[in-house]
Amino acid sequence: ELVSDGVTVFLTTQYLEEADELADRIAVLNDGKIAAEGSAEELKRLIPGGHVRLRFTDPSAYQSAASALREVTRDDEALSLRIPSDGSQRELRSLLDWLDTAGIEADELTVHTPDLDDVFFALTGDNNLPNQTKATVR
Image (tube, rainbow, N blue to C red; front, top):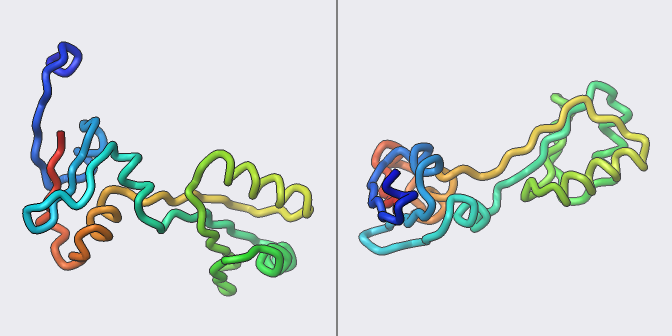
């Protein structure tokens, strides 16, 4: 109710999932200084790490896709490919259209986009303090 009345609520939390759900604006602090500030979506776009994973049951479909796609990380044992992507509709549509045109059928497609934990660790370089997150939420 307060927010809808135009009141600013200032919340500090170490739970980044909570910040992602509740906050319109987030500032990540590193050594007492703001390392980055923006909406959760803006912060997530700051760092690489988003990808699409394609999993195949047909080894020939897997090999065809792996041979044709650039910048792909292969897992030959699991018959899966990891493709860098921002997860946008445009990129997914392009990938699906390409698979369709090439006649390649993937059995599973999953999209991973960075979460605020990924953002925090990328901005602070502190991978050893998962329970001591320094995030300020506005």
